[in-house]
Amino acid sequence: MIESIRKMWKIGELRKKIIYTFLMLLVYRLVGVIPAPGVDAVKVFNSAGMSNTNLLGLVNMMTGNAFEKMTLMAMGITPYINASIIMQLLTIAIPALERLSKEEDGRQKINRITRYVTIGLAALQAIGLVRGLGFIKAGWINYVLVGVSMAGGTALAMWIGERITEKGIGNGISLLIFAGIISNLFNGIVSGFTMASGNATTSGWLTLIIVVVTCILMTVVVTFVELGERRIPLQIAKQVKGRRVYGGQNTHMSLKVVSVGVLPLIFAYSFLAFPGTIAQLIDPNKQGWFTQWWEANMNQGKIGYMIVSGLLIIAFTFFYSSISFDPKQQAEQLQQQGAVIPGQRGKNIRQYLQNIVSRLNLFAAFFLAILAAVPTLLITLAGVSANSIPFAASSILIAVSVSLETVRTIQGEMSVRGIDMDMDGFM
Image (cartoon, rainbow, N blue to C red; front, side, top):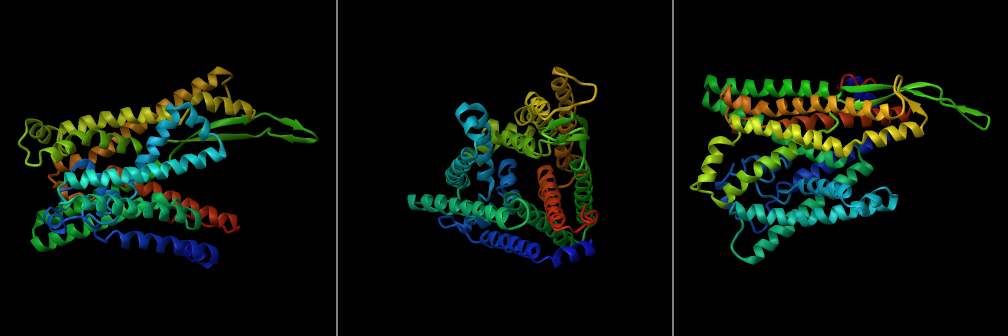
């Protein structure tokens, strides 16, 4: 690994890209410690950990604790993710947007619309969540300040992400999320170490060891599955064009084992956390029957929560796969390219692809559901406190995916320059 880093650092252009990426991430983290105007800092300080509900905890995890501290980056890049998902679903539902997405200029227009939707969502989310938590100072001007400042932070984060994608290494938006997750994980482990040292008890050190070992095991398993792929053999027929012969070779089509990524987890968490979050914002004293029932049966650490979240993850896995992979369209593209799957002809190719994707989705659904249940199992079986777990299944999956993608990008940069680089040390 050291030799690989040395080779990588010798290339001036690649070195500039890495330094640029690091500096932009540093700016993002520095802005993330500036308090937002219009927020009551005393209430924020006295209510530390109030954002530890499932939905708000997800936002806090992806922003690197910026939401819990109510800084300019409290919304982070999450409104952009939500806006992108909304636009993706609308593109499928609205024929005009679907036609627009297939055009080069149309995709640029959709990207501009996504940016505008992001700013609007950021302002609405900021005002709604901060007001619901009771952190906005009295007066309408403070509502404006919170909405404008936090939406401006999201706009800045979106701009930083785009600049990293254009001039740096890897996908900028993904790296911003990665930076927040790693920061949250690092702070959680340091906090656990500090508490274990201060209490000087065996239980504190045992909790820390369990959390660290679980995190390492989850990272190894996720990395193994993330690198897995199903290779479908293809035979490309010979085509004569002029005096040249094209095709005539054997190749393969690769399908990722978990092609849906982290979206089923985010969808399931958001869907399941919505009733409890609204109930907590409306009834912060937990006097209503619904709030008490939800806390007793559907909060994180409860068996009911684990079962329902698992079923939602399985459902959303198949749903998102159905809109992201079309076996009919894929079969038509193979036929246009003159490629056939050995032993399959005509309509059988579509059904063959559909069967393979269904089996992969079944594995991915159960894998994600089991992965999501790990924090709950730590709470119920190992007796670990929810506040002592600085990670979630989605955070580990995102961190591993972004890391592998960044390594592949660096490997591609090296290959373009004709330098053979062994990346096994990074993986």
